[in-house]
Amino acid sequence: MTVLGQRQAKRAQQRACELLTFGDAPCLLSGTPKKVSGFLEVRNTSDEALPLSTLTLADSQLRSSSGPIRELYVGRTVAPGETIQVPIRMSLDRTTPPGEYRQTVILGNNQQEIIIQVAEFQDMDISPRQMVLEGGPRQQLSQSFLVRNLGNVPLILDQTEAIVLEEREITCKALQTSLRNHGQAGFMGFLDGVVQELANARVDLLRTRIVDKPITILPGDSQRVTLEFHLPGNLRSGRRYLGLLPILNKSVNLQLTAIGTENLDHSESVS
Image (cartoon, rainbow, N blue to C red):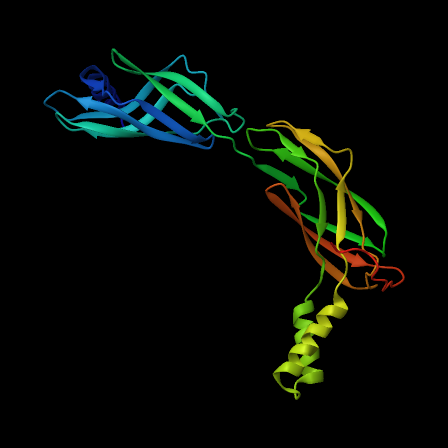
């Protein structure tokens, strides 16, 4: 836009602010910090179409990721005599605490209070997203990872997990082996062979525990977390196992290579 165009747009905005008024409906915005939205009623009592590009916030205490929020973008034209619900959207700093906030929006000589309800939002980043382990039956391992709180509520890490391990490509291997050994025995013979192969490859649960739990990570903070792994007793040496470690609303891929003496003792509980 040229300098002349910018001046004309500014004058049009000033005139719109002088002639437009707020409607009677209350304004409520709600959502998570990433997207707060709602509607604001605006009325045009003049006989000309009026462009409304922005609204000003008075003494705003709200912040985006780049600084204080002083204006709300609208980008609407209000027809003569029209009363419309103008959509309002804003993106707040992701650590903005949940709760109710009250702000004053200005339109020319008119002011109206808007209510902003910020909801709880739990989010985090985990690094690395994959852990590679190597160990033998009943061995205890430990590994650390970094957790960054990207939400607006504290993260509390205190869970103990039991993770299902699956030998890599075991389903395909079981199908292939059963086809080779029982392919001529009919469907039930083939199916029994698949079940037998899967049962032979099954291992007990991998137990995990967060060291020094509970761990609390405040919004915007990062902390290194150490996890203990208690390997099952019936791992098969040389086999590679895959699993999924849940951490609140995220997950980490696990890859475990079994080493050492094979132990086929199935006395460990799988409950």
